[in-house]
Amino acid sequence: MQRHGGLISRTDLADYRFVWREPIHIRFDSLDIYSMPPPSSGGVCVGQILKLLEPYEFSRYTPESVDYLHLFCEAARLAFADRSEHLGDPDFVPVSTSLLDEEYLARRRKLIRPDQASPSEQTRPGHLPAGESHQTTHFSLCDGDGNMVAVTYTLNTAYGCKLTVDGAGFLLNNEMDDFSIKPGFPNVYGLVGGEANKIEPGKRMLSSMSPTLVLKDETPFMVLGSPGGSKIITVVAQAIINFARFGLSLPEAVAQPRFHHQWLPDVVYLEQDAFDINVIQGLLGRGHDVRERQPYGDLQAIFVDDDGLMTGACDPRGRGLVAGL
Ligand code: DON
Image 1 (cartoon, protein in one colour):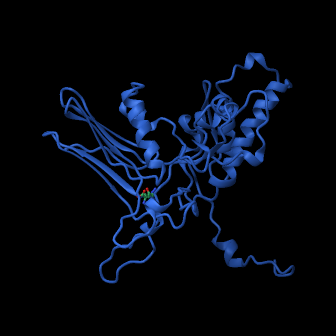
Image 2: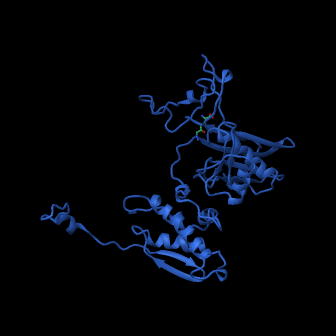
Image 3: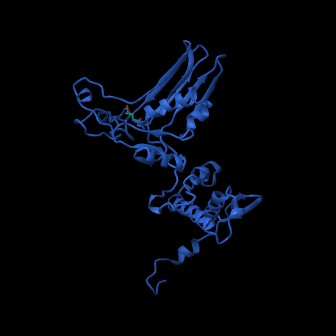
């Protein structure tokens, strides 16, 4: 090392230790496969490729058929995209345990087109459940006397204007961005406005918060709300429709993939990896501009049935919990 100007010292070598780690376990068909965990990407990527391909009917392929080579390459493309972002030495970076989740891989599998390669430049690493969110907070409450509370609390963007009040310990918001700065000029959520929402002394800025109570025959039925800036509106509207019109259970209504349109920009935003390729092509075919984006919103909802029994559902995209007293 010294002779060639290298950086590694005797102490570095003396300090190196091997570490026992739990192997990655992959259940593939009826096989239990054990392989190397991070800091190798090997076990996770082998596992992702196998699990992505598991549901396909292999009697239709041979080891050299185009269909098989295509599918394998598409699965490998997705695995290596995840590798680029989500894997590293677990002593230095948190490595998510969700990379081999059935549910996560089912979403990734939807990106595989049976007869067309997906360009790598349009293939992104998957979105994994986040830790602490940067967002606004919503909570929903309901009691046995039929009182319901929906609270959405916002600093606007992460850490507000990034100033705390000396000695008081709280952050100041940056809600001024919810005013329209000038006609047609988008705010941080891409919303445009004009005179009605211009800045004026004593005026309150136009919010999209939608803390919502729903009654049925004048009795409590639902209480819900979410963070998400302008997308709060479509998150809440879709949850009510999913539950009250499509008849999904409350957890399903909350978990259902989301889509968003807000007039300008003239784009349908679809949650990344959540929609079937046919849906995307169908929307494109009807003239929509379609873009995928990371999952959003953190809906907290309670449903009260005819007997007063309450069901709570927290968004699987966030870290909320249902609590009962
Ligand atoms: O009131 C509004 O519409 C915004 N200040 C909400 C911001 C928000 O939800 C940010 N979190 N995602």
